Length: 303
Image (cartoon, rainbow, N blue to C red):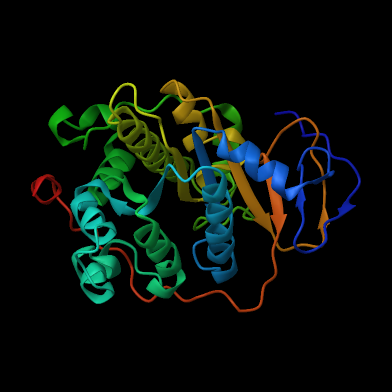
């Protein structure tokens, strides 16, 4: 595999956007207007960093100012919980009941305070929230057995994932416990293959459920922009979910990411994102207070 060309580091001051391939500063208003004209804008997150979620809210609100016809999709929720998200946006649930009915601590487990401002933004502005995930057991089964071993009726409405690029395979091969800083030798080959299949199931689920939601818009009605709240590992370098969206015919998309470093090293021959924002880090990482439970079955996903 060829080593990506890199330039000298450039300064990346707080509260600025840069083009990650050139290191040049981007104008905020022009960038937001450009994003508002996309079909899908994915805001990559590190789940346990509060400032990233604040940034997601600020970006979503900025795009909303240009294009209030919006939906917001969340990796956190399996598709079977879509009716609960609809109840929340319709004002039928209080916050405590929403967290209970959405099974927050079973399906996700991070502090709800990290995400509640986004949920309230959607409710306040009647922005439809989309449950982008599949039932967790499907990811486990595909990881262990492969896609072809799953009966069609148990695929949660997903189509087969497009084969991963070599670059994606190489990037994920360096993960150890989802840590991209780990070496490529940190996982046995069979574990890497299982992890790839699991990641692709998530990637495809997010893509399929975004496309499903857009296809439900009646013909002739204006299409909303979809904001995707998705882990950055599924988005970087156009791999993962953007790649699966393209396979489904959705190419008018963008990815925005954050950095907390005061220097940036441009990569002119590959694009990690359309733009990168420099955030502050006023708090330590949040602690995951509950691990998602792999208890969902084909029966529960249809209930």
